[in-house]
Length: 185
Image (tube, rainbow, N blue to C red; front, side, top):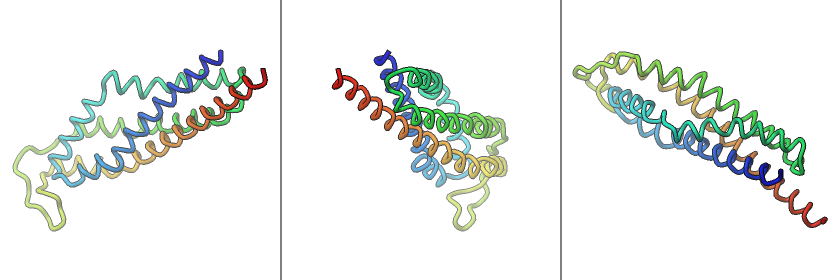
């Protein structure tokens, strides 16, 4: 039973860490980099990213932690790693919050961007401070997407990072509880 609990915590922590890293990388590198693009390039790049990311590797890393966190909660309630239970529950709540933000805000914004008209004609001249020329359809699509998506991505990045931290601490407590139990035998 202890080995199952350890494996469950390890894989859930790995998944949470992968998601925390992905969403955080978007927050500090990808979106600021795309923010420097003209509207048409920004919209096309985000569309390409949103289409490419829906693949088996992403879905595995994104979806698997949820049932594993539920299983880890059940195992911790009835097993030797009970000391880690509050941290596992915290991670479950935080991961679920990030998961709901993704499904409730970011994915619908991605879908709306994918369906939005993006002008393919010549771009309008750049305004002072603009990174490039603006085309009407791309500009409207970007304006309806970028600010809200970036804000909610930061929320989910923080939630997943906090879940990862809570799981790291849960693993530590689980390990020390196991070591204390082994020393007492």
